[in-house]
Each structure stands twice: as structure tokens, then as C-alpha cells.
Length: 404
Ligand code: NAP
Ligand code: MG
Image (cartoon, rainbow, N blue to C red; front, side, top):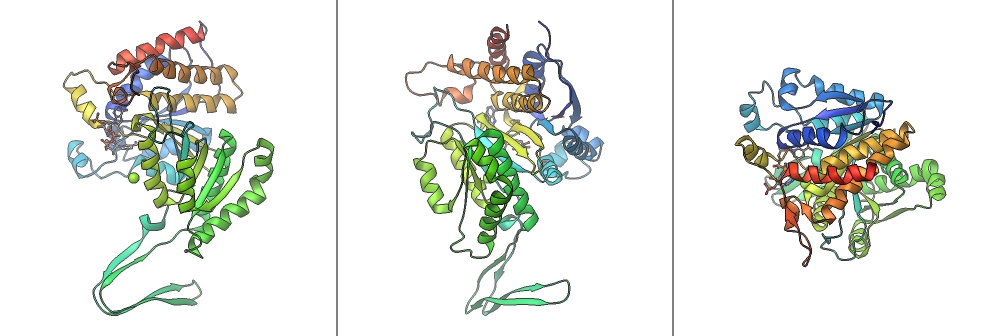
């Protein structure tokens, strides 16, 4: 069989631990035999980040800006224990944080659905994609405990020395106090990434805040979205027959539960943190969640939502077989290859991505799965747990048939 050709390089970001092992297996079994992979390779494994003083992470993000599409393996975010384990000269920052800051992007997370695993919410028949504004608000807040009686004020000093001052509360006893912020530029990028991704995936976009209570802060989010939509995206939405829908966050939660899914739900930072865990748990497993970072100017970085699966890796190092689920990592590759194919007008590459995903779904629907999923299947479905390499081989058999 002739291998499928690529024109523009795909930025490949390798990673750590068990997902690094899966990365190799996926490339060897499911990609290299079929595609003349044209990637620009960056090793974001912790050893290489240490060796390059994290330069490799920055370089990979700049390459993504240049070429437009990247695929990333899960990576370790160092903590104190990792600094010792890897003998690090510094506690390097989270690669995802670095890449997100450079691309100024928003993360979209969507579950992969299969027939034999029913969402906890019965009427969810289509995926719900969560878009989380991963900047500012309570995550960058200043806060302290108020020790006793006294007055708290909010003071802003302009560059020209002008002052706004408002009393927050006249404390008659001790309490707590918090100051949070966001930036117009960040809210605008968030809005543009959401509208862009809704157009890409031809799905409706929902957005919700608490603007009835937060009349300046959340109101700014609401108005920014509405202005950018009216001025830049409305025509394209109308043409595609998709809608932008704004509502209050509590109303959104009620509607989401009653919905059948099939839309993007954009959330402020805290709402996104909480709601994405609720939605992903209700759909099934972290190992079945995909994730894509989309920048406001249309650059894409695809990855799995889960981490490096450290517990499995330590077993792997002891020579044990592990049943780690590679699906979300495979879908990161298929997502990136499909996007590369669309941008470069390579129908064969798009077709390959479709068939790779279909082969994964077929394998699961045939009852061949990794351990994490077997416990989740509906009553009456027979499923067998296999290890990662047997699972990937079963996908390959089905993929070969589809490509033949
Ligand atoms: P994790 O790697 O997502 O794994 C947590 C647990 O979830 C695993 O122990 C496993 O449960 C289950 N799991 C996750 N993915 C699975 C898969 N593909 N197949 C089967 N089971 C899966 O999270 P973590 O253990 O908290 O973090 C490990 C490392 O990953 C950390 O160093 C963290 O910094 C990093 N991390 C990276 C990213 C990223 O690069 N995007 C995201 C999150 C975390 P059982 O052990 O019960 O089987
Ligand atoms: Mg969280």
C-alpha cells in the first residue's frame, strides 16, 4: 500500500511516563505503516526540558505558531517530589501553561462516546464540549483574612494618578476579603477562540455568566461576547445554521442537564474547572476525554485530557503488562492529522484520520477494551479487558481492513 503523504510538518510534542510509552506504540502500529509522517519533533519529556532549561517547550510553542497544528503527549508538571525524582535544577513550569500563554488559547474538552457506555445523564446522546477560560478571576486573586473591625476599600490608581475608590464593607468583626481581575484582551481572545471553534466543528455555542449579580465584571464578559459575535462571526454562524446562545449560569446548568448534548459550553474560569469535571465524569472516563487548545487566530494543539498515568508507568517499569487506555492519545493524533489535512487540502489524510477513529470505536464496540472501560459498560454487554499492546493491535487489524 502506498503511504499517505503530508506537505506541511505537524508539530510533535513528546512527553512523559506511560503516555510516552503509548506514544511510541501508537506511532509504530497505527501511523508509520500508513502515513509518511512529516513531523517537527520536540521532546517535552522532563529529562529534555531539564537539559534545555525548558527552552524546548518554548520552541515547540513557537513552532505551533509557525505551522498552525501540534499534537502533544501528556507531560509531568514538576512538583517538589519530581524535582528530587528527576534531579531538576528548577521546578519547571507546566508545559501546558507555557504553551497556552504563548498561543493565548482556550482549551476545549470533549468526550468520545461509544454505544456500550451510557452517560449517567440518560438524555445526553451527543458530546458536550466544555471551553474553559483559563485566565484570571479567582485563580489570580489576592485575598486575605480580615483580623478584626475595620473598613475594606477597593482602590484603583490610574497611570495618571487618578483614583477610583469604593467601600467594599465596613467590617464590624473579622472576615475574609478577595480581589480578582480579568483583562479585556484575554476575554476577547477567549470569545474569538470559542466562536472560531464553533465554526470549525459546526456546533452551537452557549455561554453563561452571572451578569445579573455581577453588573460590571460578568457583564463585561457578556457584552464582549455579544459585540464580537455581532461584528465578526454572526454572518458565518447564519451561513452554517449554528447559533450563539447566552444565558445565566444557573439557567445554563438546568438546560445542560435536560439537553441531548451536541454543543460547546463556554465557561468562565471557575465554572469551567467545576463543570468540566462534572461533565467528563457523567460521560464516563478521563481516558476518553479529548482536549484541544485553540488560539484566537486559529492555531491548534491536540492532546488527551488525562495525565501521564504515573501509577501504570511504575508497574510498567517493574516489567508488568499494563492496560492503559490509549484512545484519547490516538484521537489527539487523528484530530491533528485531520486538521493538517483540511488546512493543506489533503483528502487522503483527512480520510485516514476518520478511519483511524472509526477503527478505535469499532474495537470498543466489539467489546475489546482496556480495564478502565470494562467496569463502565452497560449491563448485558460482554467486554474483555486486554493490555495496551493487544488493544492497539486490535485497532490496527480494523484499520487495515478499512484502508484496504
Ligand atoms: P493521570 O495521569 O490522569 O492519572 C490518574 C489516574 O486516572 C490513573 O492513575 C488511572 O487510574 C486513571 N487514568 C488516567 N488516564 C488513564 C488512561 N489513559 N488509561 C487508564 N487509566 C487512566 O493523573 P495524575 O496521576 O494525577 O498525574 C500524573 C502526572 O501527569 C503528573 O505528573 C501530572 O503533572 C501530569 N499531568 C499532565 C497533564 C497534561 O500533560 N495535560 C494533565 C494532567 C496531569 P488507576 O491508577 O486507578 O488505573
Ligand atoms: Mg479541576
